[in-house]
Length: 106
Image (tube, rainbow, N blue to C red; front, side, top):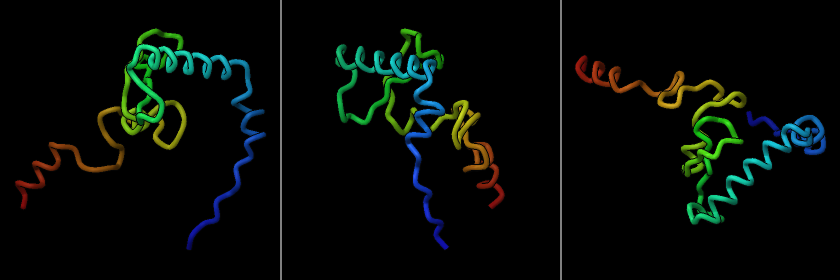
């Protein structure tokens, strides 16, 4: 049976998280990094790319361009994939070693 989605309260989200001075500074740093990448010709609007901070420090000048899917698939501190290892999946598909052993068993 489908579950009805609860409407998001954007005003509450902004008050509790997005509007805090610390978060505003982080967002400004992310926007600044994106703008610098656009200016350098590394990304453009609508290209499906994200500007990633490999060190997770948004104030760092070190950035790289990744596809949105790749950038958002690895874990972070929050969200449904929090703490997920970059290379693997928790409870997901079997790793290469397991696949090989399963293939030999058949």
